[in-house]
Image 1 (spheres, one colour):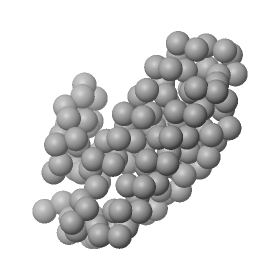
Image 2: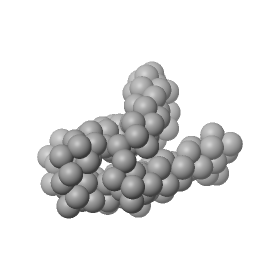
Image 3: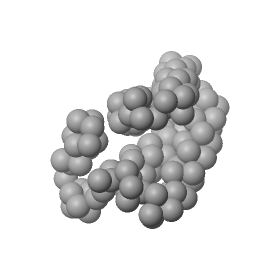
Image 4: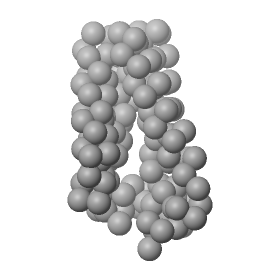
Length: 131
């Protein structure tokens, strides 16, 4: 298991302690989605401090997703995801700088699509990679 996922596993969320790597990634994506929604609301309410706090979390969590990629085993898929996560980070930065929720809508859509695919991986396939 990669160091970045281990760090996330050490958070105070009780259910995270026993989670397998697949579940941890899903939880990271869920937290990204929650913080994106919160940040969009903060932009609409002009709550700059909350927006900054939530988008900083989003950037950190997307960075965790990047760090968890196994570039050796994942090959082209991992390379493409790494680049896509980099793009998402730039969009989040843009939204924060411009106080514009639009880039966050795109990032939300992208993360939701990735999460849907990730969560749809069959249990027997997950177990092959958790060994």
